[in-house]
Length: 611
Image (cartoon, rainbow, N blue to C red; front, side, top):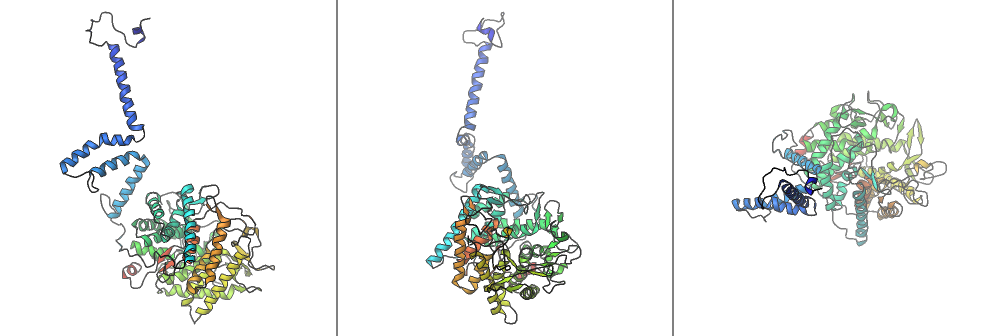
């Protein structure tokens, strides 16, 4: 068969004869195919071979930039000129994916809106605030070589925790250091990045500035509150709002102020209740709230609705919007600072009804469900530069009632804070309650009737008891709760109380007691905790809690809690720092260890915004 008959097109018999240099139709088609294949190969090489974008940028952008430079007289190598920057921008844009480009556009729009530039700039954007970093945001190396080395070790622990979180769980709320993956509890809904936001100020305080910048970039690009997510108002406030506020006050970066206020506004619908006591849970999209189903009668929890004051006062100061302060101040009717009342001598119940503000459960505790309420009474007074007399009175009245009704001494001489349930005293003290030693020491200086010395002694006794709860375990780490009955003292007797989840409260109290007494035993006790953490909690992928502190070998729970970076390691670092690093006369720590500046009386700009 002739070859021509195999081609898709053939020559007609009566076609005129072509000249020797002419091509028949079939030959033209073959040449067209070859040419097309060559063009395809060239473009494929440009777009798909390694570093092909360099060739592309040279082909498509070099001539235009040279022409522009010739017209304008600019030199392409200068950083202020347009030539080099435009070529780099084009190259970088070609290397980015579609999602990255969209995020860049979104970020640029947010920056324009913040600066009041461009179309659609918000007229109700945040007011200008003259940023002034409070004293003591960063410290200096301790003079003592031993203390310096221990402080450096704690910084290495933070570096190890952070590096593993970034490697295995970046963007997730927390890290599973054994299985090396991300983890999240239902406290945050679909909100992301709890460890990043919680650790921001610790990174800055430890002068881990590269890591701080990486965290800042994530917040700028990825921290999003516009989602259909039900979150814990309490946890999101102390970790996210508190973390963002602290990062702003330490660094002065505007993104943190903007994000904190944005999130604060998302939390405001939680206060839409008959009494003004906020819901425990809130859907960030719909603004619909509810309380924990396990709380007595669907009631509000004292420690949750009573732990908003510090953050919301600063939200008003930074936004110029009084609504935040109004929600947590006496001007709004029944509020967290007015909830000491009712039928026990202690005047405190853990649960309160939303409908008519009444006590609905006979359970009184300075530990879980009640703890940070007392803490914020004292700190509201301190943060106001000691002008909030209501907070001061409520705190010292509550402390007097606690000492009368709950504080007891064991037969072995250990002072502890019991719990009151249904008219009976339960001789149990929780790890969470151990914060009270530091709280009492912090407030001792302002104690009425010359009780400063007595309160410092009480704080020292409670601190000793909490230390004993550590030393009486096999791992030298404290259990979740310990008892003083049945012939035991400062020991957990129930299996569900023997776990340790990297909690900070005992370390926190050591730090306060060191600052106020400079007794070296507190640093020694803190170092014992460091050694125990290294021996039993450090794993290949970070730090993990353990299920039984009385066992000889650790059974890890596989969670590196965000508060381990936010609180435990920060308090350890400050325990081995000088007193002028975050000094107490200028800073107050929220219940997640995020430092917030004292609102000074002589600062009329902030004071006026809080009126």
